[in-house]
Image (cartoon, rainbow, N blue to C red; front, side, top):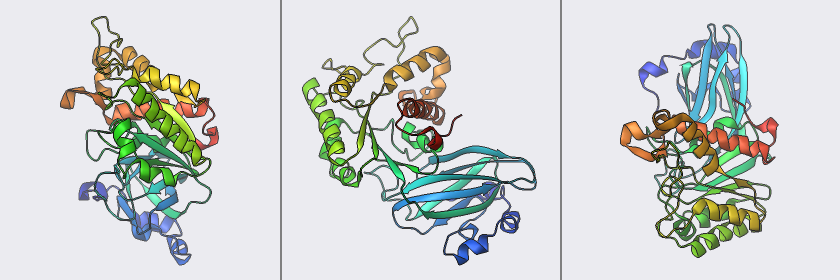
Length: 347
């Protein structure tokens, strides 16, 4: 991943950080620390796997620090620290190749973290192999994936910031994929399925690109994914697709374009709900949740959730929209007891 420019790098004072945290002790124990960091970015030469990251934040003045990593994943929301105080936070991160979309470029080997926020101050950092971490796999399309560049963002790219140490998001969503292509591409389903371990969660949101998939095939494909996840001991969770921002004159989204009914008349959310009920699979009705949010914001207010202004795009979300939608997923994971409250960040 690219490092911050010099203006951003100057925002964090490492001389203060090095004196505040026993980084040399970490290094003596074989654990990467601040020696792997410039002022605004850290690189760790680690193989693919799952890692716990512990950061100590704060400095002489009041600070507010966030952490992102790999392909623009939000890993830690902006966290304040009063002047002269230290705040410790931990999270778990998935390192893989390719580091972003499964059919995209490999990216930089190892783990790359970026230190951001309105007043960033990194006082210490430790990266260690995660033990007993639970993986949360994501299977989806461009509305879910780790988008490579601004202003685009998938909700799966924003989800990690809501999860604490012990839960790692492995986002295998890929732009342009339908249930048909995800199952058929060896870099997608055939790659993800063997990685699923007993107890792992696997969230499936595929519909936006099933524009020519008939109902029987769409249903069968969802059932194939559910069965394959269960055969590996994983916990499937079906997710209905986020809405498209396509308003009726009365300010509602009650139309096929907004609610993902394809040209063959296949109501994707309805079929997903049906498969979830018939196969006893937990359901996150993100269609209903995003519909309610978009309609509450109205025609103008909802533009900020999508790329309406930037690209006349009412399907793909901005960072703001993806973050809001990831929050809805977080809430449903807790409500349905799929992730313990103690592993989730609120707010």
